[in-house]
Image (tube, rainbow, N blue to C red; front, side, top):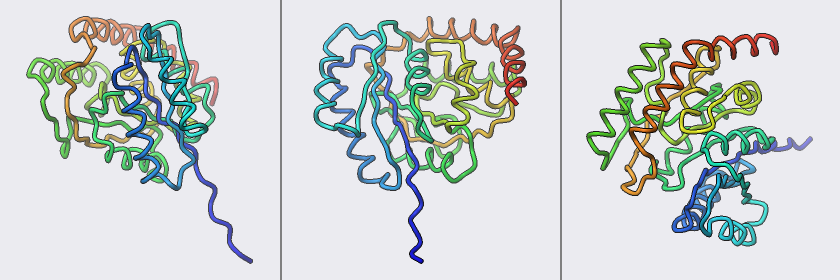
Length: 255
């Protein structure tokens, strides 16, 4: 008998965007070519999650769909919020592995392979890029951002006794089981989405892998550092006071 090749696993690479008419087509094209050259064992798609753009982003996405057909898709939300966009994209997908990366591609695309391999063959439930572990290379990052990031991650580890070191890197992947179990429990619709997901994952026994990345900071980043930090601290307080306990209770009823 002729042995049949194993069925391809499916992968969605999600790019959350807000008013990115200037770079979204170039970014999608670059990521699309990279996946075509390096991810032949996967049935993959690039998916853009547009959360409330008011420029020509949606019009451009419709044009991109005509070019890439089934290898590309997009979703549109009227409300803003990166976490809200990722939650919708991941829960409405049925693929084996989902991941996301920022539209500015601050993370080197070659780091996508070890991230996905950790989920595909490494036995991990969640894989995250990290700029704060051995092997990471970070370029053009301001001292202010570096200090705020390191301080924030130290606070997370002190409050929740978790091992991961970089909650905020815009480069993460999750298996379908972890998506179905954890994402409905994540309440934050904004930037704290990442941190909440990681705390829920580690504190409930899901296996988490940190992958060192090569990161080049985007000087045109839309992130408002101090207001985002304030909201993140509010999110940590919610998780510490009742959020983590409530999520544990909901997870226990599913198991």
